[in-house]
Length: 166
Image (cartoon, rainbow, N blue to C red; front, top):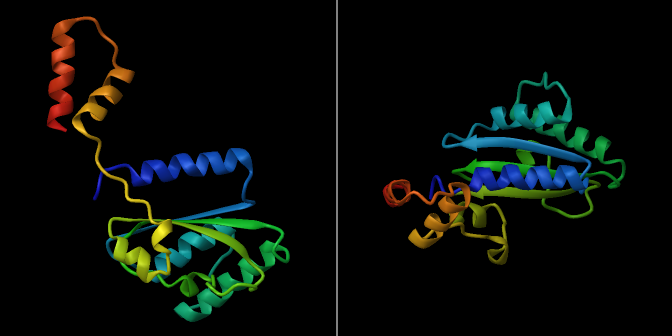
């Protein structure tokens, strides 16, 4: 479902990963409703500081594969790859990554999608899929009051109305 906080959660996780220096490289691409492999490749290339002059998708993928391998320094440097708002299958081979082990690149992928079937098609194990649902009315009310404290009964009523309409 849209609007439940997948992208916001991803941004927070990215900040934590950066602060703790868990990965040397953090690579991010927002995919969107219309999956465009060339645009995804461009986004990945920007994070890797590489220019893609190749004309074909496969040649560009090979260039990205070489860059991942070179920057990984024999697997010493880890990559955190964020693919946000994925609506359709994205082939990791198209962005220079291989699902096969021992390819010389240590990486983890965080994938956000509205559709668990997309995750499954991309090889995500069922136990690694986390569904994020909407807050219940009581949870929304509690969250609202954490940020807006008031003893004024009229403002309290307005707050309840705001949460109920969301």
